[in-house]
Length: 182
Image (cartoon, rainbow, N blue to C red; front, side):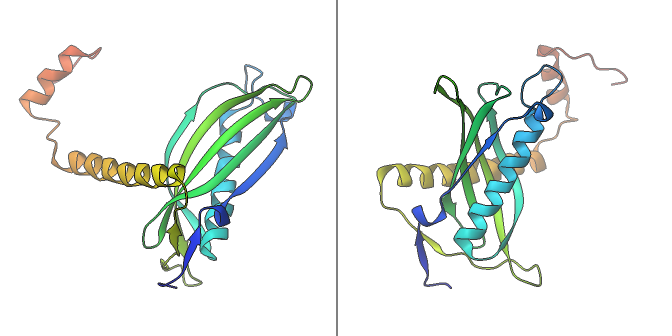
């Protein structure tokens, strides 16, 4: 598969679902956990369609809840592969909710999932390369590179940062904290 390339368009998936009262949280809005479940499903479908393999969620990199979703709205999720590595893919998902009576559409959520393609023995498998054919696709791919770099920087910081040092503990005083037993 190393010479295989596919278009971003070939990865695109769209799903729509009517939001029911059984999907609500305690405030009467659609539960964020329910939306996360749908996001994971479409990320799986998108990555599996693109790679031709079973895919697993490696990380949920970003979930920005921008606007609440109401019962009776039609939620549409649009997903595409934005970035590919060797066995991993970053899937971008846009969530919109439409008031089916007025036709008004609002952007409710943007999310990025890192998915990894697996073979039958659950080993990582090479995914196709990505054909970029628009400025928007190039922008999304470059944002994927940036996401990965930021994740690596964060992980390196976690390993190297001495949170018990005198300087680190002293810096906590500028936050709403109270240290006991130090």
